[in-house]
Amino acid sequence: MQRLQVLKGAFCGLDAIQQQLLIGSAVAAGGILIHLLYKRRQVKSIPLGEGWWGAGQKPVSEDEQIYPFEVQTSDEEIEDLHERIDRTRYAESLEDGCFHYGFNSTYLKKVVSYWRHKFDWKKQVAVLNKYPHFKTKIEGLNVHYVHVRPPRRENQKVVPLMLVHGWPGSFYEFYKMLPLLTENHDGLAFEVICPSIPGYGFSDAPHKQGFDSLAASRIFLTLMERLGFSQFYLQGGDWGSLITTNMSQMKPMCVKGLHLNMIKARMGFSVMFSLMIGSYLPFLVGFSREDVRRLFPFFEKNVWSILRESGYFHIQATKPDTAGCGVNDSPVGLAAYILEKFSTWTDQRNRALADGGLERKFSLDDVLTNVMIYWTTGSIVSSMRFYKENFKSNPDKRRDAKVGITVPTGLAAFPGELMHCPKSWAQHRYRNIYSYTFMPRGGHFAALEEPQLLANDIVQFVKKVEKF
Picture 1 (cartoon, rainbow, N blue to C red):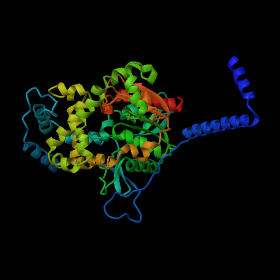
Picture 2 (cartoon, rainbow, N blue to C red; picture 1 turned 180 degrees about the vertical axis):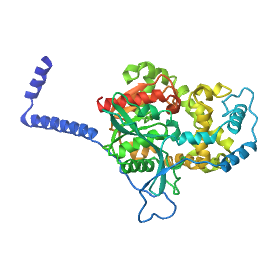
Picture 3 (spheres, rainbow, N blue to C red; picture 1 turned 60 degrees about the horizontal axis):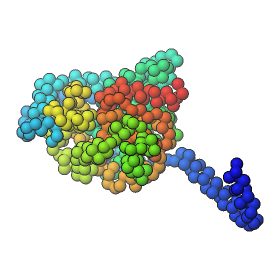
Picture 4 (cartoon, rainbow, N blue to C red; picture 1 turned 90 degrees about the vertical axis):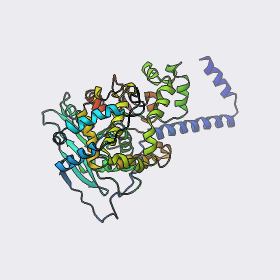
């Protein structure tokens, strides 16, 4: 009260012109502040753009029909695979090398022996065809997707949900989660759409340069519109997290909610400052005890570990076709290249194990089915090119990097993910976080590794948004 009297006295001591200037300045400052707050709350979007990725010139019209699709195989395809496996020339593994040098050759021989003599591809094709598959042409490409509807039940609200995979995964990662999502959750169930990113699996590969996450996002938005969905939920990890984020930026009015299990933070001043003091004064920078445990020592857990695991990234972001020649021609080379990621990205401690801990969380049938999707479609090179297309220029200068995400967002932070992103970092980009969950276990391939945990987190997030 005394301070107010002092301020009042100081104001009254000013002449009329000074008082008017002071009032005008205060009004102007207040107006600027209100404008900035309004601008921040405005729903911003990025342009959809347009593209044509088919061979040759764009036709006048395009077939927009949706056609049923079935995964098929043949004796000739399996015989060719076996012949190539039989001609494999293995490298000698180092003594006690474990998985520190990549996929251990000694264990690789065991995996390949199972693949050659026990793995039943025809049986797995039947598993793949358990759910309905479709294809439709968008921007010159046949886009493949799985579409699963929940059983009809009384008093049940059905919400559409698109699940988007990453590399080196596929739509098959979600198969164990599909029955969990389509079951009834206290009156809520999901109608699930799982597309294959163009260039992956059964979706056509682009014939032209420049197909990046923005192009994939636009195609998937077109797919949802073609299926008759005006509003829907999105979920993604790896490339799927970027694609679904871009979809949310392009058409925020259509995206009711965005759920991610891989979160990328922008490395600005506030992030750097939080790293400097976060281990000593975590509460000042919004870190929880679990954030501190996962982040620090930062260089060991989040810098050196990334350097050890990102060699593939530099190759695929620069010269994907060169490395791709070998893995596209050799099934064993392809298996080693893909399955090494399923080992180390699930738990980086697996590098110290002779078998890479691969079968601790996955069955060989499951991971080899994923490999076979790449092998039988010859899509490994086109999938690798997606890195090149997204990193032709500085990603922080792309238009999507400058627009925040305003749709309701749910984040699931798995402890085995390659890099941890605290909620306080995520909030810089995702500005409407409804839920942030420290998952008790699991790594990069969460849908395949921990389907129940991921499904539960998606359900609780959607219930919050839907106010169930």
